[in-house]
Amino acid sequence: MCYFAKRFCAFLQTFINTFFMNDLKQYIEINKERFLEELFSLLRIPSVSSKAEYNPDTMLKCAERWKELLMAAGCDKAEICPTEGAPVVYGEKIIDKNAPTVWFTDIMM
Image 1: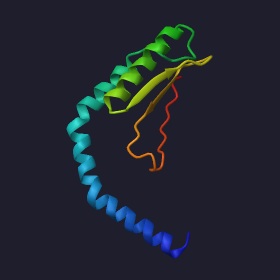
Image 2 (image 1 turned 90 degrees about the vertical axis):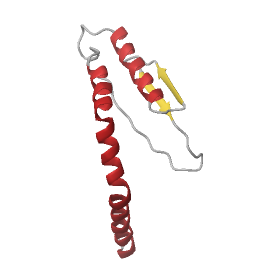
Image 3 (image 1 turned 135 degrees about the vertical axis):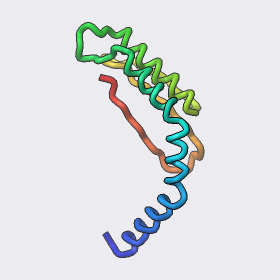
Image 4 (image 1 turned 180 degrees about the horizontal axis):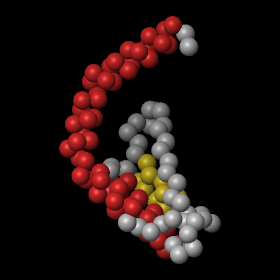
C-alpha cells in the first residue's frame, strides 16, 4: 500500500473512531433489548433446512420474519424470492442512486 493510502486509512480510522464510535456504541446500548428480541424472534422459528422435520413452511415463516425486520429497519422494499431450496429475502434502501452499493447477505440454512 502506498504512503498516501496508508495515511488516508489512518486518518479515516481516526475520524470514524472520534465521530461515530461513541454514537454507535450509545445507539447499540439504547436498542440492545430490541436487537436481542429481533434475534430471538428468528431463533424461535425452527428453520434448519438440512433437517427433514423442518418443512418448507417453516423456512417461509423465517423468510417472512426477515422481511418484516427489514421493513421495520427502514428498507424501502423487501421481498421473498422462492427458490428450489430455501427462499431468498431481498431488501433495499436507496439513499442516493449515485452512492456506492453496500450488500449484506445471510444464508438461512
